[in-house]
Length: 452
Image (tube, rainbow, N blue to C red; front, side, top):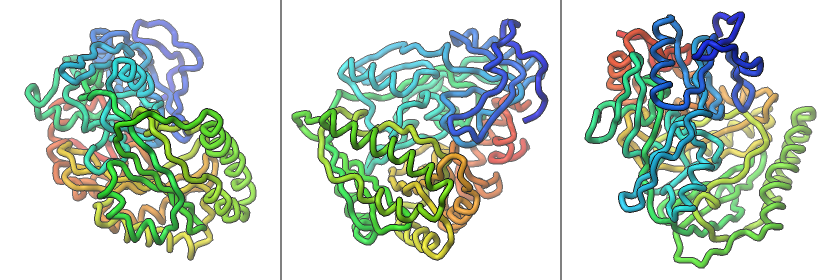
């Protein structure tokens, strides 16, 4: 990770607490020792911290909640922490917008919006990320017509390498807005974001088991007939769990408290944690555990406000790889992945997650310019994942896949330039906004390549 500072300092020169001397992500697979840590409480303080770091020859990276699995936020220079930038600046129901600072977590945003009778149109399946971390890495849920969290942005505030503050939207610095919505931390530090929101609505979720052959045979129909469709396939089995979310006039009919605790806490977290731990020490038991897991959750239907349907608690820690492939490649890719697992000696305890998104116009969005299907694979933290992830990545690359920016992959700039038609547009903007590489780190140098 580079040099280790003998004394860690905050931006005001005070010694940072010992716990800040090493930063690690949620999964524990990425660690960094920054030379300086700042937790600015305003955009002016953030700009001053960036200017001082640049003058001192330090690289600058901002972190969120650490839910990325790559080293996108790692630095040995200035580490900008999010806890001071957590204001909800405005909620404008008439305009259909909310403006929040970069360190606001999605759970806080969702609760504030629901309290105001508003909601995001779509979201991912967890709420622990900060809004800047989620958008900058292209975090997404599943949607036939509604895209990633970044696709719901209408404006953003960006602190650039010289400490300038840019206010970006379709009408103001549009070329920056087009790229910075999924900016990877390469263009500057995002300090605030404005999202499009709409009146609070209800979703009916229908969850049910389905065989692998049936869900793949009906995949196109299931996507076309539902606003939000996703499924999980359990390796070593023929079993899948499907989920269909669609808007409804109501009334609300939430999951009963006891049923919710049994399904979402006891089975999906507590029992699954124990099963994964057993599988790590006794891999031969994993296929049998998978067969039990695929049958553990029964069908259920419920109706609730969006974030209570889209998201669920995820307490079992893992590492993850996810690729976006062209929508039409989804079923062939899945069948090849299943065949690969079946002919190998791999033992995979986590289900494979499949979601979809429509094409968008963001330069480095994984759905940029094409309707996409997402295939995510996971391994329990501490397990040997390299052989599995390598085999999966080979399948995804052959299908023209684009790796999720916050999840594990081995792609470099040469591959990604061919995968993204607007790649050179993004890197040219990076070179203009940050000619000295203030926001560089090893990960960005690998995926974006050298400056021209």
